[in-house]
Image (cartoon, rainbow, N blue to C red):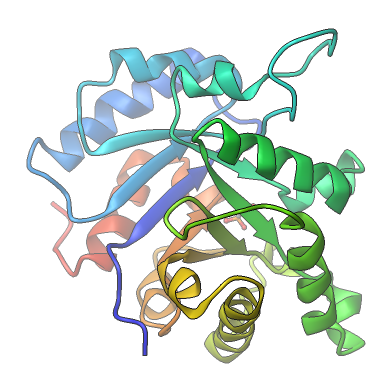
Length: 257
Ligand code: PGA
């Protein structure tokens, strides 16, 4: 069995918090985390307009990620943000989130280009995959995940540390409908097997797999104990600094102060 890696906890703030709110969060959250090195990767993914606050964040425990990027590095793409712009402030970027796929019609083909562009630019993509409720009910979950992995990673070379996959069942996102630990375990093992086949056992062992979808203070500890899980992508429950901090403490088995 894959040994447990350092927990990776990413906060996906979606379209919440302006830069003032983000700064307030960072100030409070930094105090709660303290200066001592926390034994987890903690990544804030605020809207693009707050990424510059990386330059004002002194606490080394806090890293930054973007919520999306475009696949080209510059040019006539009104409204888009390029990998090199993201790189000024971030090491990570969420790609293919179900809200992008469902509300903004992002296809696996576009997600594939974005993943390739991120890796080319030495950004670590957090590639989101997951089934809709009707697909699960039709017992199509594995087919959907397999198709997403095949198309989103088509012709993408990875070494293992340069890609993170987030399993986010669409029906569990923002709904309070939690996936059971058995459901998560089954899909995460499937993802690891597929990555072994597509790349190698070694690469599959190195890739971090996160779970996302209604992760909260009550369920995070149990989710993190699922064997193939390396971390979580947390939406609503990460918006409050004290709550997010308590979640981190609970993963690290520390008492939140
Ligand atoms: P949620 O969102 O934790 O609010 O369900 C997770 C996500 O969309 O990444």
